[in-house]
Length: 371
Image (cartoon, rainbow, N blue to C red; front, top):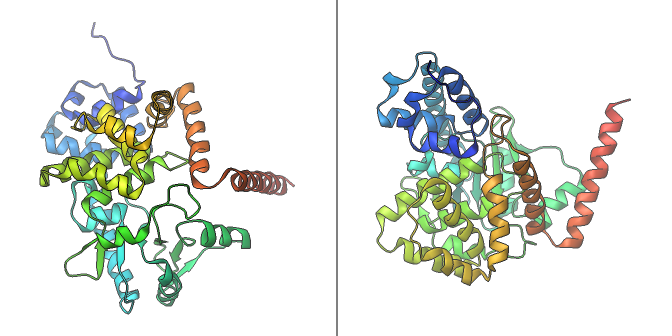
């Protein structure tokens, strides 16, 4: 009698399935069902489907599974094309702006044709513009159909005075969302970088008015975005993004690994880069030079105890958040990430007032709905 492995996957097993698709040919239908559900929840189904196609094992996948993989490939390819198409509308809206417009995150990966864009689902379009131009950018987008959602006075002030972006804007006809940033971290964050340094090294996108961050800054921004988040629904997807960026950019330049930590130090963002390199290497096998991690740890002035605590948190919190792979320790780790993300975003006093206000409003609204 053939022994069937359990249909409950650990987070590490899910990662291994995505990293080494050739191992999938031995899965049962029950295991496939769980794997597809977990990958869909983690926004990694497209990446799994792309990996299976690249490995040339489509014919060995059960016929009941293939439609899910084909659907994922079609969806991610369509979204990749749609996000590039959306940038043309943004370009038209901002055509008169005499200032740099830098595409960020997934939009930048797609428009530059990077490996990180393949198999990836896309959400909002994120752009970075100089802070003095925010009013002009917002007005130009409004003329072309974008509008901010409903925010009370506190939320509006929260965005415009404390954060690194204005309230998200949604197009009235297409429903697309654009996030207009003027920095990559909130102004009141303890390690908010000088945005001018990012603009200075940004690179033009041929045939457009857009720019993207330099390759090195793109890695640092991706790391900063991930390890300053308070919620990690897309945490593992973002870690796979980092893995793809690191592999592609390091193959393009012999000086990449030497310049990356130096740039992070100049921007004051050694800690998120340290965590990104540490966990991509530990979880995804990214070929990070061994000497870089202790070098960044010393630069970030992070003690060994603090690093062990962060390891205990992130090695659990980065796992897929699905009942088939969720553990109590992962739930606790995600709670720690939530508190850490908010603590990094604003000073303790302001954070206490902000979270208290959110809690009171949530209780009041829930009470109101119940009557």
